[in-house]
Image: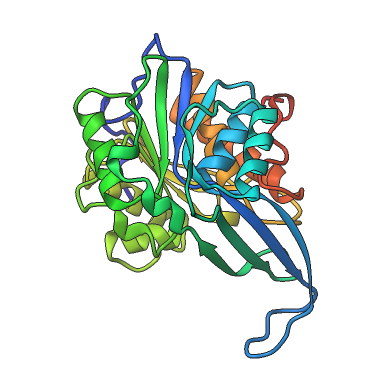
Length: 318
C-alpha cells in the first residue's frame, strides 16, 4: 500500500485561478435510454423490460449537475441537427448550463446511449452510439475563456483532442480533470498522463490503463491510484462501487468509505460523484473532502431515477 504521507505538491494538480469562476465540461452529450429487466438478462432471446428515456453523456451529465448545484458551467460538445439535439438544448438551457460552445453537426444524429439494467439496478450491458463526437477534433475545441476555473473532459473525445487539452494544461492552462468513461475508451489516453490534474476511473478502467489485473480491494486500488500518479496524473480517484473510492494525490493515498444506499438505478452514479467532487474542488475544498461529498452524491443518485437526481446542496452539505 502507498505511503500515506505523499509530497506536499504534485505537478498538474488543481491550483485554481482566483479569476476563474466557471467550469468547462468537454465531451459526451447523448440521449439515454434505460431498460429495466424483471429477471436477469438471458442472451439470444427476447427479454421483457420497462424503458424510460432521459438525457445523458458524461460531460453533459456533469454540466447539468453542476448547474443545478449553482456552479457556473459551460458545455463543450456536439449534437446532431435533429429533434433530439434541439430538445437537449432546451433542457440544458432550462437547467442553467451555458451553451456558447455547444455545436450542431449538419447531417449527424445526436449521440445515444442505451443501458440494460438487471433487476437489482446494476448494469447488465450498455450500447453507445457516439459517432458525432468523433467530429470534436482539436480544431473544434474553443480557446480557453478567461473566466475558466477548471476544465473537465471525458474520453468520448478523440485521442488527439484529449492530448491537446493535456498540452494546454502543461502550457499553463486551467486545471484539467478527465474521466476515462469505459475500458474501450481508456486507450484514448496516452501512457504519459502528464497534464491531467485529476483522473477519474473505475476499477476495470484503472486496470486497463495500467495493463494489470483489475483492483478488487481498497488496498489494491490505492496501489493503482498511486501508479496512475506515477504515470503523470496529478491525482487519481478510483471508484469501487460498494467499496468506496480509493485516491492518491499531493497529500498521499487515502480511502473514502462508501455511503450506505438502497440500490434503485446505478445509472449516472459515477457522474454524480464526479460532479459533486468538482463542485467542492472549485470551492477550494481539499481532495479528500471533495471526494467524500462526491460519494454522498453517488449514494443519493442510485436511490433515485435519473443521472442528476439527488444533486442538491442542502443534501450534500448536511
